Length: 202
Image 1 (tube, rainbow, N blue to C red):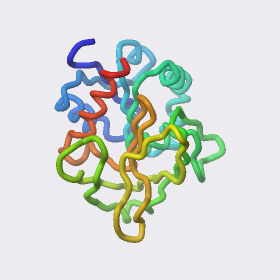
Image 2: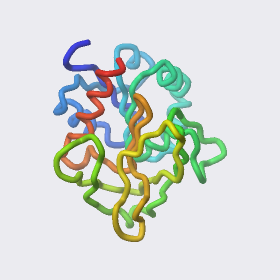
Image 3: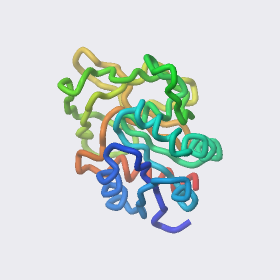
Image 4: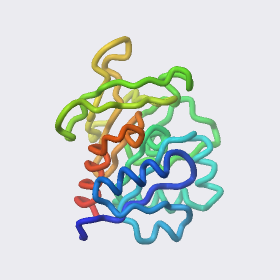
């Protein structure tokens, strides 16, 4: 494949522009995905943060949810940050009864686990596979991972404080997910990792 894979950002809500910028800086051809037609020529997909219940509703309303599930099942690489992590989870604690997900990662995630907007925080994390210094993670109404299956690789956990041991980044095959928002940091290492995942699996 080309050295600059085409990676879409699901443009239903959330930090679409920031993800597009980070992907471009990491060497991808980045494009916003607004409709079913936009899915046709992408080789990977980022699902940004936002509000997972609204994202689910809009994906169903726009006829995107089932095609996204099919693309994921066919092996498309996907990266979900914050609400995007929730959308890629096989199980979600305290989800609304009518909420639906793309799924694919064998994990159980709890929505808004770190608290409300006022409880947002930043923390340096060690993230497996990105190299270099710790990553400046930004948590905003973030989920956390409560349990993972045997095929899920844990990439990062909180190492100190009352939340020590909490899982906040995972990978299962071509699927990557973080509780935090790497697109808000100016550090493109996680996006660069995803670009390499896309190259590997496309």
